[in-house]
Image (cartoon, rainbow, N blue to C red; front, side, top):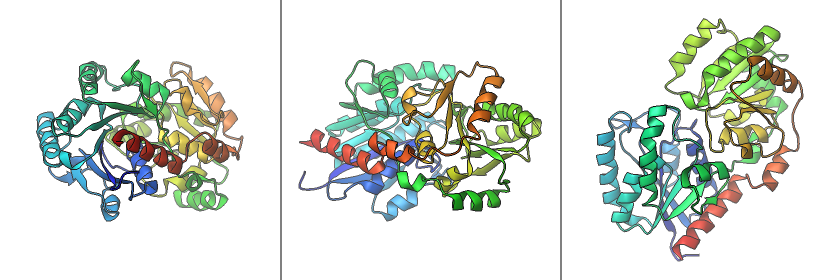
Length: 376
């Protein structure tokens, strides 16, 4: 253990409560030991100095003693983002023992500047098994990711699939996306209370999705699939928790499919852990993932899970999920939903997740040990 805390700058896309990376670093923060490690944060979820998300961790982390730095959103003006990112790391970079970058396509700026400013420990962290859902962006990101890796001297991934995607044959460490397991434990009380609040009948089969409203999550597929399922079972609801740029597009699709009364979009909720108890089946038709936090949360709540085969098989930690190709007919997906929708809860899941290393406390400890080994 070092005499003074190791100072770590976590560079993340955002601290949006519906974003998986933000939830991971927030969980680390809750279980880190301030005597050993101090966390500060830098993100680009800002437009002209105004934070972009109403539901975020920024203020909570500041109250806990962390500094939170922001630059303007890269997709609005990449040149401005680049200048601001370089400047802020020039200004504060030398204060840190570790810069831990969770943005592979910006690592060529972040970690390059960190190296120039004397940061000896520079970590690149892979959270996905693809670099974009847009073909041209994937092409753009190939050289950016390759160049960015040159400035890292340590590599971490949330899964084997995410690590192999970004780092290839390089050595990397897998640190699981741990969660506060007991917070997601199924509750009859939460189920009844929140179903009443949301206008869901006790007999409805509720299919749930959790995550940002972005193309990667493929929620248009989920809505069309639900339309096919609802033709079989009128006593059903689709509950999609989160928010993002595709909200208006999804709302229009819901109207087009005439599902206004059966698809619920309640936004980003602080009680998302309790809302898993409302669901009967968890659905993840993503175009790509690393190891999604929401899937671990759903398993902790004992939900049967249905994934697209673009989601890494490692995601099914408890062995209770099923994978289907997005090219399969809706009928195949509908059969799985119909089967799992009445199966009830998987009561041993929390024990299995704990045994297999998915508690936030255990993973925060592994991360602190990782930093300490680098600094020695």
